[in-house]
Amino acid sequence: MNHQIRIGLLGITLAGALAGPLASTSVLAQERFVTIGTGGQTGVYYTAGQSVCRFLNRAESTPAIKCNAPSTAGSVTNIVSMQNGEYDFGFIQSDHQHKALKGLAPFDKDGAVDELRAVFSLQTEILTVVARNDSGISDLDDLKGKRVNIGVPGSGSRDTFEEVMKAKGWSNADFALAAELKPAEMASALGDNNLDAITYVVGHPSGAIQEALTNVKARIVPVTGPEIDRLLAGANYYTAAEIPAGLYPGVASAIPSIGGKAVLATTSKTDPEVVYQLVKAVFDNLDRFKRLHPAFADLKAEDMIRVGLTAPLHEGAERFYKEKGWL
Figure 1 (spheres, helix red, strand yellow):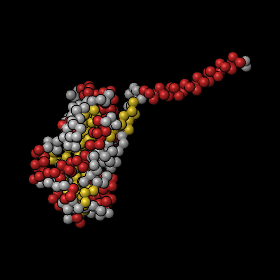
Figure 2 (cartoon, rainbow, N blue to C red):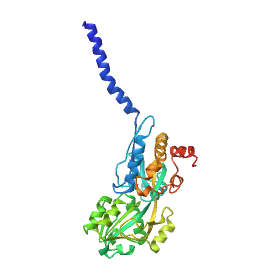
Figure 3 (tube, rainbow, N blue to C red):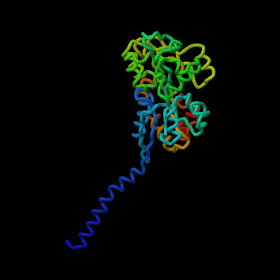
Figure 4 (cartoon, one colour):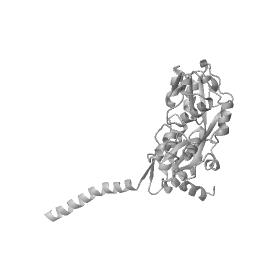
């Protein structure tokens, strides 16, 4: 083999070696990556985020969209993370959607989050209070002076319960202990008698609530009273709600409380095509989506695109809903 032939073959070999990485880099450059902020791993937000990503990752879109949905502290953290560009989407409570848009606490320091946009809503989320039977807690007033988990700072649960505390005229000092445990830690703390009661805003059935009621003799406490009635009258982002009977051991009748909708949100900065592909991936597979968690079983498309959406719809979502003839 002469010198020129060897040089030619070497060139072909090098070109082939380089082509693989360059082609791979080109494909990666074309892929789009999105992140959905969820909530605690025992809550419905986390299941919802993982489910949305499952369908979006399988969608036949060009370029492909790769989705991940990490566990987070919940609503407030998700809104701040979307505002900062850390997350593209986030699950939030409908009351926090309203507060962020209006610049109300806990979003009053930096002003209204004008760019917040709604994508769709999911299940109703209900403030759930579980107390040990031996704690002497049978109604909301009995929480005073007890060891209560009030929730993780930056979570929707914490903010909602703080509104209830404000309505009752309470502060953290009114409890023997105001714990800030994560949802995954609450049930074991209740079972170990390190807490008298836990609070959690969540869709039902919930793994954390199931664990708490299974591992220790406990009850779900009604969230009612004149102060709660005044709170509902003055805060239209909350509604009266009930934890259904029969979902948990010992819960033979519905338990009254307050709640709102879980909302998948984004910002006006998010690429409309990405939002379009996400909602298409979910609604084209809605029957399958509804089977992924009992809290999704009764979802209806006509409600998901209207109920609980106090923020404007993102243009990408609006485009899909209009194509379907739903708007």
